[in-house]
Every structure is written in structure tokens, then in C-alpha cells.
Length: 618
Image (tube, rainbow, N blue to C red):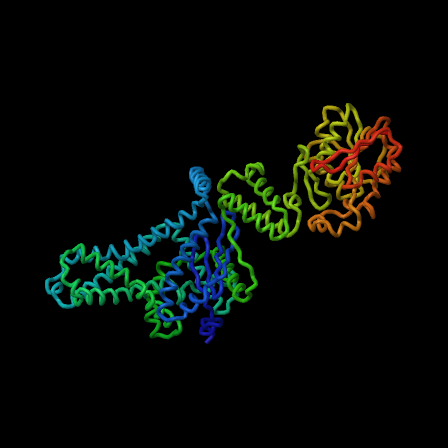
């Protein structure tokens, strides 16, 4: 009694599947999901909604016709899914890469798309050759040894059809057995077993974990192998009757004596009747699936035997994990229409991929230039070289996607990347300090040009330490001494890491402006917080939500730090010392008023022509 309960189905599901390259595709009522283990060992999932039109949906409900439609859809969908799973791996071969690049440059075509079309055509041609042309050819050869009474019989067409069917059956079994010699096919059949085990586990209420699913059967009633076997039986019956009827009763054809012409007529009959055979077979399989008794078991037995001996193999737990991932995704999407579709991360044509990323960024109010930076950094090319067409490898595409997904959360790009280039230095960046801006590179340049032999330099409000590091690195031969100060302990720690990263010696101190600073300096550089407190809520979200507010807020008018500098600057500048400041737009006049007792002052513009820097000598 306990055994019977274990075998009885607790859940009914219409979810079916297909094994693909290193993965499994599962299909439900409203969606399909394909899970594949990529070369890095991670499980990628691609999920799509089944957006069938009204007319197609209605046609899929009509008996017999739905079998034909489902056969065509399965062939098309199955081929595409196999190609998509193969695309996850791509091709890193140098010669193949050159050919891919040539196709991309000349025709804007992806090699995998070409392979997909060619493979589909070759697959159809091979199926016709093996299962239609070859059996008919063999029957023609064997016909020479048929008994005379057999050949002259009124029902010779029927007997010939049965022989033809027997040959098809033998070829079918031989084909399944021979392809098992291929390592990739054996792995495909293991994933086939994983697909069946997962569906069986769900139907019997077993917890969907690799350890539990492994205990379930790899044989399933609704397997495509059973469908193929039924198709084969129906094919034998229908083709036998059709050949006999056509050659016995159709006047134009029954008098044909030319062997080649008769052969071509038989081929045409088989091809024309394929949709009819598919429709009948589908209805029979659907009918048999409704019952589970000994009588129906007789019809299911051959298909199950083929599954057990040929088309399924015992999967490992990693394969089961993949199958479970695909199954759970279908369950999730069938239950909730708002669950978004997902895509594999695959290689492709650079221009198309970049355009897609830019579009996604624009839809999320993210500057499209960030997409260019991501591709430039990952592909190790200049942004200006992104117009040169090439193929992006799957490994590169995966890295690009990981960065892009993090950027889509709103986190600033350079925090995601982890570092940035600043005036010839590599600067580590994170939430401890502001990201160095391009205009601040000009401030660093002015500082470097202002330094003389043996000078002492102070970088006030140092943040990431980018200016202090740049000065120390570019003026190393001048014997300068560089100090960096910041109110934030976290920022000082980051600045020290950047000094070490660039191999320079900078003395960083935690200090509220000059509180912990000792001595006088020939050059003081300062890029203080200068954003008005009331403007901070209106900054870009990535600045407002991620960058430290302490490094942004300059008080009610943005000038708090400049006032404090003006009050104490003379105590820390050496004779003939220079102060270099960065300021916000429209602030230069007010700042100059704060430093009235000076020898001279100069206002300098940034790259956009905005007054951005002030040089003051005392």
C-alpha cells in the first residue's frame, strides 16, 4: 500500500521538456525556459513567453490539426533552443573568430545565425535521406529477391509497405544506437534523463532538490521517444495502405513501369502524408496519456523500453540542478504573468550588443556613455574604436552583462568597476569617497605644473587621494613632500590604499581642515564640498544615493569650506605660497571676495568653458 502511494501522482502538469547542449528546456502553458550550465560552471536561464496569436491558439485546440501545428512548432522551437544553448559556449578558435569578424564587418551577420539556418536545413535533409530515401532504396534492392507470387499479388503493395516499415524500424533503432557512440549525445541523453526525473518528481510531490529528484524514474509517459515510436507505427500502417491504394487503383500511376519514376512517386507520397501521420500520432499519444492501466501499458511499453535502453541515461546531480532550475522557472512564470523574460548571456555582433545595452540604459535613465565605457573596458579598446565591428565572445559578453546589471541598480559605474584612471594613475574608488571627476584632472594638472623642486604640497579634502597621488607620482623627481588631509577616516584609508597601489609616498592624516595639519606648504590644493545643501536632493540618483554626502554638502550657499579656508590659509602657506581651488558653477566671484588680502588671483575654466578653478597667491 505504501509503495502504491509513492508511485501515485500528486500533481498534474502539462510541463514537458527537451534536452539541449549542456542543459534542459522546459515548456509550460504560457512560457518556456531553458537552463544551461555555462563554461564557468554557472547555470544560465533563458525564459520566453509563448505569445501565440488568436488564430494559432484556436488552431491548436482543433483535434488532428493541433498535432501538425505542434510538430512544426516543436521542430522550429527545438532547433532554435539547441542553437541558443550552443551560443552560450561560442567559439574561441582564432580562425573561427576571424571568420566571425569578417561576417560581422561585411554583412552584420552572426555566425551562429548562419549555422542555425544551415543546421536546420541539413537536419531536415538528413531525416528525409535516412528515414524516407534509404528505406525505399533498400526495399527496391530487396524486391529482386521477393517471391514471384508475392510480387504479382493484388496486395503486393501492402506486403512491400510492411517490409518498408520493418526497415524503417531497424534504421530507427540503429540510428539511436549509433549516435550513442558520440560523447556529446551521451551527455544529451543524461540531460534527457534529468528532464524526466524532474517532471516525475514534481508529479509525485517529491521535493525538487538534486538529492531527492535523483531517486525518481528517468522514464516518462509523455516522452518524445514514445511519440516517435507511435509515429513510426502509424507511418508503417498509413504508408503501406497509401502505396497499395495509389499503385493499385490510381489509373495514371498504376501503369507506370519506370523504376525511377515509381521510386519518386513513393517518396512524394511519404512526404505529403507526413502532416497527416503527425496529426493522427499526436491524438493517439494524447489519448494514451490520459490512462494508466495494463491495456494502455502495452502501447506505452515499446516507447518506455527505448527510453530505458537508448534515449535516456542516469544524470549526475549537476545536471539535475540544471533541469530543476528550468522547471522552477516555468512554474514561476506560469503562476505570475508579471515575471519578466530572461536571456542567455552570449556573444554577438558588437554594434548590435552595444545598441541593445544603450537602449536598456536609456530606458532606466542612465547615461548611454556608461555603456560605451563598459564595452571599452571589457574589450580593452578605446571608446573611439567601438565603431570598428567585431564579434564579442561569450566570456566577454558575460563580463559586460554582469557590470551592466549592477549599473542598472543605480550604483555608479566606477564603483561597480572598482577603479578609474586619473591623470595617469589608477585610483581605487568605492563608497568611501567621491568618484574623481574629469574636470578635477585639470586641477591636478595645474598643481603638477605649479610644483617646484623640494616643495611641500598639501591636498586638503583629499577624498580618494587622487590629486595627492597624481602630484606625488608626476613630481617624484623634484623631491616634493606630499600630505593629504580629510575629515573622513574611511576616505583617508582609501587614499592610503591608492598611494600604495601607485607606489608613491604620501602622508595622509585625518583632519577637519587644518585641525591636525602641521607645518607650512608651498602649494595647497583643495577640492572641497561645494554643493548647496538644498540642491543635494535634486542631484542625479547615483550621486545622491551612493556617493558620501559629507563630500558633497557645502552648506546653505555651498561656501562653508571656502570661508574656513580663507580664515586659516595664511597660517599654513609658506612665503610666496599658492592656493589652488576647485569650485561650483557661478561661485568664483563670491569665493574671491573671501580671499581679499592676496597678491593676485586667476580664474581658470574647465573643458566645457565654465569658470571652475581659482589660483591665489599670497
